[in-house]
Image (cartoon, rainbow, N blue to C red; front, side, top):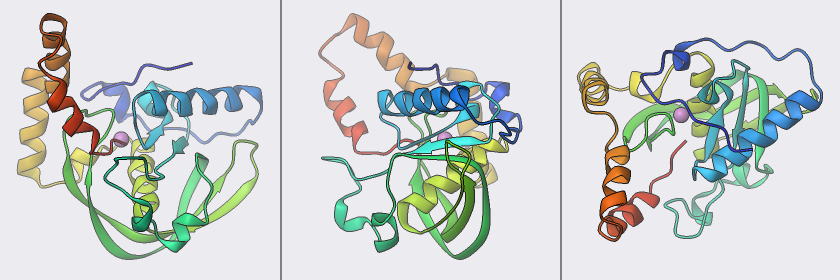
Length: 208
Ligand code: CO
């Protein structure tokens, strides 16, 4: 089932998520729905609070796609060893090294992209969908997406991690004018053909 994704400035995106303590069919069904929603929106990651569920849980599939901006050659050796889609529950970063930057986007802040600094390499303790304890060591895009999604569990968005001036500019723009994408969709209802070229260009950017 595809779920509705909350958009900034929805206050529910600012809540802190809770540890998942009971595993079973409810968690498994929700994980399935999260993955389905992520794929439906062409996202590369999605966290539970983005659909209004305050669970420490996220899903990721950031493997390279055809015509995507991330190609198979960009995948690091560590990334290639990890099976995706990933369901990550109760994650905790236990070690990290280095710094990296990436032009991030977010399904809860559609059509905005900004460069964010993250740890380059992370070691993560988490539980899988059955509650089994796991350790994951990665870098590359996967490490970046994990950190972006973990921020959601704390009520933090990528637009909080950029300069104060840029952050305020984007937040005010959204609060006053909404999202450009929404306006475009409304325009599409009137002019069916016109916005296609623009839409294509958008697809090259990955949204988390
Ligand atoms: Co996001």
